[in-house]
Image (tube, rainbow, N blue to C red; front, side):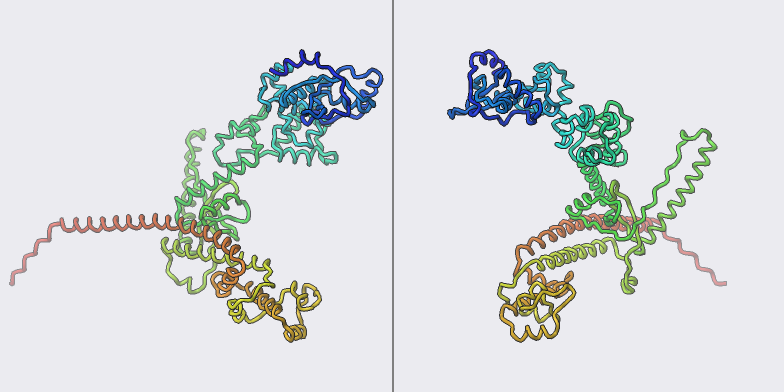
Length: 581
């Protein structure tokens, strides 16, 4: 190794170098120099000189030198007023120079834990060391090296506290087990100088307990498969020497959220397959936004339930004999179970009857941690709709498909209205199409930001043009002013655009003329969602069609079997006629 030969070469290359020709290096792991101790060293150098040479290497052919090690002696010599310093002239590569600087700093007695951590990290990143070789090189055990390496992950605020001995190494060791998000919260709430509930001065075990209690999540509260969590380093069961068993707590919030959302999406799809005619939905509270967004992106319509939906009854669980001390207790429990099950079946029957009549609507509800079946009162229908026959599953899907297409149109119209308000078209030529549009709307409204164009001073928000002001404007309109008025008239009128009404059609025509790229983006977004939903509905319709065909085949087979059975029966013998008396 190149570093191993430095000591023998160094003794032959000691020279005197002008301080003016020396500059510090960028790879020195030591970033903090105590001013008091530096002043004390400077005074010692004034009295006795520099007792140990620093290490430098030449910078190209410029006559300048870069410090390899000994920057503190260099700084103190500047303070002492020296012009030259004894230096070992080294001809080494960048990698070796960086390694020597790190190694030399690690041999100092006053190296801080953070400086030590950064130094070990740099040596490992050089590719020449691992934890085992570092332990041998510096006479440390491997656990010591690993603990120091963890300090690299400390956020700067907590690292500074450790540098200044305001928290102990043991406390820092507990904190660095967690991600930056938790570290930031711990610092803001409990380690800042003005923290109300400060943890400074607490023992490491207490800090570990409080972090787990206040900043991690109990995995047992989640329903997803936690097999991978059992061996995860972010599971508190694997972070502490002693744990209370169970699933443990999760310290990786982003991973926890991802595992939960993936589970919810997968289970929702299973429910959809099991109940193809039931709609997906979510409530204002206890929902998972990520799961809802993913299902929507996959083409499923997830309805926002603006009123509370009741959970579908849970099936009673039959008692087990092993759970009871006597047969009498078991029999009593079983009787209660039978009564509960009877009540459960009656309640389910009542719910389904009301669903069949349209009084209630069934939903697969996306919760925060679980997917549940829920139901709620259906929206009020008008008298004509109330008299219509109950729709078949196929008709319901077709009606839902129509509604999905309407939603795509409605969303497009809504977003287009928002975009038009931000587009200034006062300088562009008024087109014939716009001229036609102007006659459609009956009222016009000049936007306040255009008052200045007509020489009208700025008004309060609630003030509008008076009739006299309007008359003055009309009397002397320029071509530009006319265009502004007509376009403002249109823009104001477009606020009434909705779904497939005439105003919405004109709105989209207007946007296609002045902002085609923006409109194309809006239409593409919602049409893509519709196409996905349309595809899903077609798949569900195909499933229903297969079921209907199977039912018809079964019905036909039963009818045929009935006919064959009837034909196989012997004909009734004719009764003899009565003989006349």
